[in-house]
Length: 264
Image (cartoon, rainbow, N blue to C red):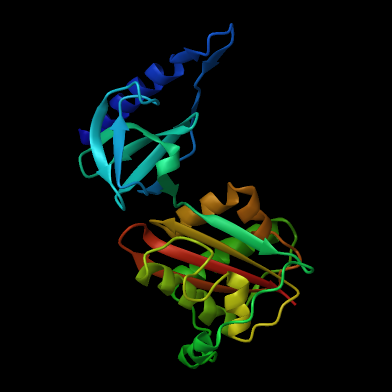
């Protein structure tokens, strides 16, 4: 019943927002179109954020969201997002500047890309904490993601990625770092950029990339990646030969996924 109610409310929101128009005093009119972008997780970044009946401050507030609370994004309305707040079952609109989408992100460095910074001396001791690169045994989730990625590569007649034990450990450490320190970014407060981190733990590469995602399932994360040009480019990059995968359970997102790629 609640799911049905959410869909009804969403339909009302879509109708009201697609019909909403504003003028700036000239003869031009701006009309907001509802853009379906999937059911992706997002986190509130403002101290207190109004969940409103429509996509502007002229609409009344339904309730207030607190910083760090999770919402589900159901679509985009100009610079605003239609979101579902699972704690109360309420659907409304929020200003896109004050939420952080968490469905995924991708980054790549080319062969002649920017050099990673040398790790500070106090971070070099972290090398001792890196597990021995002898264990290439993949968890069920890691194996599932590897199979999905290599099938996508096979469909494009690309060589499959092979698992690199040392890079596996780095990806696992990055995923755990994101969960333990409650952030979603390529830039780790502790290790720096993905490329800083790879080099800190003795990975040598000519090109490298990283995809990250927060999703309830491996399949959901992979689907989101393949719907994004930058993520898909990493997955289907013919220059990448080896990979490392780290997947950790997350209270906020269900799972945090990190896949790193290297071309040697």
